[in-house]
Image (cartoon, rainbow, N blue to C red):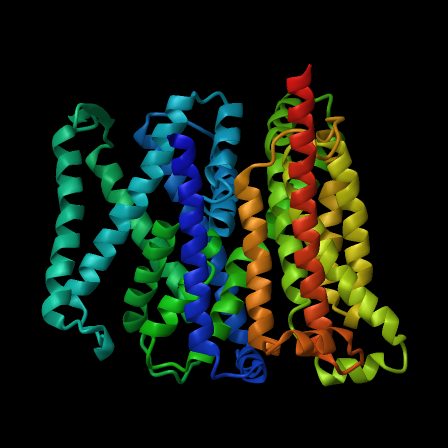
Length: 525
């Protein structure tokens, strides 16, 4: 029964994601790609730097979650380790959510440091409590005391908002009251025992979670147009609702969900400006920290290997090798997703005019196709990286090298090439972590990885429809796929999307066939 519930949960996440993407397409279809690009270019450098600085402050605030959770379960840990597990755990959770197991990293780290499974479960539960108490307290205070300009189409007035704020604030106060009465003791609820923190820890939880949400909202608000006419207090409730929805839906990174909610609630700002701000926010708040985590761990691994005689560093090396493959697998998956989606965005006329006299057309077409196929391959290899397979590690290195070549030849996409080059270094440094000698198809392939890969390809197809339109019939599709020219972006995009889809189906089908053959051979024996 639990197995089917898990599958049902994955299907529900996939459905929510598809609905969010459809709503997002419906909201943005009246805007051209040029208008969205223009909105991105309109964000001043000062606003980008401010958002980056607020991101750093926010991740420092997030350390308080783990620090308070450790205090609540009466465990001690050095501040450096608390900071590391908080940063890595939060980055993975924000980028991948529950779909790929954001709690896995925390479990591996804390278990390597001597924490029991029960301690880790209590700690993760306390992290969730901290978030919800802070969210309810902050939302309750805003709804009660801040006059809000609610979009009339929602059918909600101040008479509805204030009672909701009172209820949320009441729940927060009840939690604080129970903690005050319990004085650090456990209480029984529904026949089960729950450990509660003391009142001063509970107050600190409320403050830290509220501050986290305010700073994170500021990070996104800093990227909105300065003349939008929307104050921060008007924007904050919309952000809170979006973040709570993202947590409840478990969609990785809140893809589509965050955009749809904010674009519908921030009615004083044009939708393309909100979408552009969220794109920049995702790069600053999600992708940059993920790359920093990968580079940091790779550099740390190199440093540890130079001092293996030191007992303390040997111990650190053991737990680093325990979870480094997981971090690298997530980074490989993100790199594959970026390549799969990058080929959907049409190249600008300036780039195509530059390519025409320097690179033959067949090389441009082949490089575009190669980039998309490498992206699909990285999506599938990510699971093998997490399983520490040497064959997956070698194939990933070759795929990344081909990806660098493809991104540069298809139009000089140096940011993507630089991203792949940065990822290459920690993978090379962590060579000793991938000592499992087994074929790439050996072992189980979790449904979560397959679902995430399908989501990426689905997102690419929907973006292809948005940017290039959908061929009306089979003849038009055939003509589109066969047409080739430097300035023919649409045929190039649809050829690559078709190749990506076919390759994903072949890889999944081949894996299922091999597993079926192995199962059949096992029964005959």
